[in-house]
Length: 603
Image 1 (cartoon, rainbow, N blue to C red):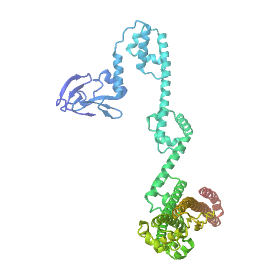
Image 2: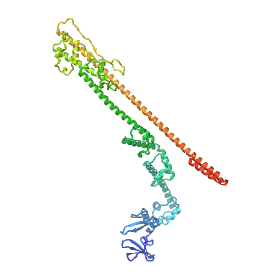
Image 3: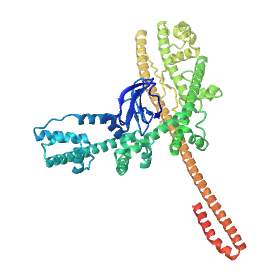
Image 4: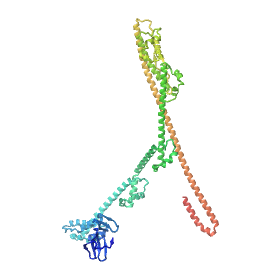
């Protein structure tokens, strides 16, 4: 920066030079320099006023010190036009080197001491790697400290220099090796953190991505390329795992999209109806088509499974309500006296065959109407036995004799009607108990008569005649005691038989239900296999359609090319016929060129 200033406006300093330059301070407090001979002024200090250090710094680094209006100093680079407040690193190193040159080194008493300081001087000079001793000695002779090593001969100095350069070369080689190793480590770190890295990545892609990094220049081009290729080969499994992980993430993303938008992607739709919509989704652009298809198939399978489970749950509730209604039908029949422990299945069906509570049960899974009927009859038989024992004890206490042929039901009923067990029981059941006691018969539970899994065993009532007649008895009390003991033994035997028969029926019923569940599972598996076959056929048809479209495109392209070629030849022939002979000869090279261009376009 140069401009003309009036030196009398500011306060002049006492610093002057022989070429007319003087130092002044402006009103703002900044230093500037004025040449009394040329009448020029400038902010930067002229060479004639600079100290040897300042001149050497400007010459070797290009940095020069200036002062701002508030008295702060800053540095300005004459070549790059860059200014900084802090002292540049190059200037700091230069100042350190100049300071060391000004140091007074001692007069060495031993050669070993002199050699150690000579090595230090070599370090300060920062010789290039391949400098010769002759060139190095010329640089050293210009340093005033060189004279301090007079204790060493020239040969000893040269030997020390050779040893220094050899050790420095080894250190430099080791540093270079460590630098290349660090560059490789940094390259691996950056590659691993690069999300776009794949098994298709080339060295050109890596160079475009990382060429601006500092470590990129620490290796040669060929070394970087070789290291990258070896690393890619050694980490093939990593890329496979990375692809698998990316595919898992894509699958999870697609599943999330389907779950969040079930209305847009109902599972009842076909693959062809949703294919374009899924493949064009912005979040699925990098997902493989086969993965999209597999996720969709799983989505459809899951949807049909859920629908089937819901349908089964609904059917289960309906069937349970029908069973409850049929149980109410059985209870109504019991209350009305239409169903007793002696009622058989055929007669009961004839009475209820038109009742909707019975007809709705026919054909459904689970417990059948006949099984529920048998359970009700079993309960009635148990209740009949309990009631018979209770009423017999009460009647015998009242002095009734069931062997008396003149004993009537009315007499029996008048005796037991006040009992708690008789109050809520239909008259028919009380009459059946009376007849059983009067005749001395005992009922037994029916057993399973067939092992066929598709048919239920028919139930029948078995009567065990246990009439015991005595021609004479010593006394009525001993006869009554003997009869009571016999009945107790028979009742215990019948109870054990009924428990065994009930267990057999329960096991048979459970086996039938298990067989029904197996048949249901077989039907579900068959339906699933049929749906899988349909999907396979749909995929095959889609592949065939894709191949047909490819063939159509190829035929269209070939036809268009043949048409263009034919049209071109027709036009060329017509032009040839119209031109004179000389013009036609001149047209031939151009025709050949056009044919070659047309062939290249087709390829």
